[in-house]
Image (cartoon, rainbow, N blue to C red; front, side):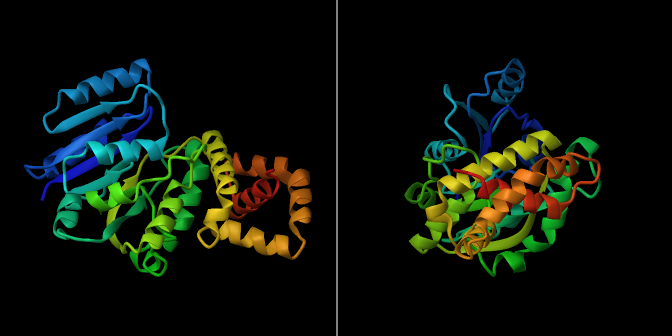
Length: 290
């Protein structure tokens, strides 16, 4: 049973992840790095280096197509019966990471590993994302995720039979980043494909700088608005907003956001960002979309 480890990447140096994986790889396995047209001098250097590594293939796209399209391309290019998708800004938490997955083969399920965050703040410049992820971590144990396996599907770290991935590809119509995993979870639920969550951790080491993370959140909310008719029941924010709208309170939320958004942003970009303020900012930003 051949395993293909697939690393979609865009302007990110994933050499540390590949170096960590290579000693764990089975003899018949392969690692494919999919670069979504990074087209920078820096990316040319690290991609060219990995192209010379045994057991590693680098797939370079000539045009940026987005993460969903890249994941689908990698599935088509892979030679393994099983595909392990890992985000390029992760690092295995221990040296049993791959063997934990391999011991579960063969399988007809999708198996989702966990996301773990570093114990100490890497830099004040990434504190917003760090605080949010640490706060959310307790909700993402395997036990909690298995309560709602499809709603908790994340693309950061999961194993899937290749034939399932080809049969249920990612939605490439997402025009903005974000919610590809939520849409995929919905599609898998409709197809009746089982998902099992386990505690096999990939460390999240690629935290965005505060301003960049806030912009990413805003882009993701744009996707949520664009796909809202598909994501009811799969997004707690969308479901909460829908209840407010039915109670004729969405106008009050928009007014509050117009009045206090700048204050909220100051908190979120400060040295003491609040998760509660972030949630309020998300709700107001979503309510203000047209």
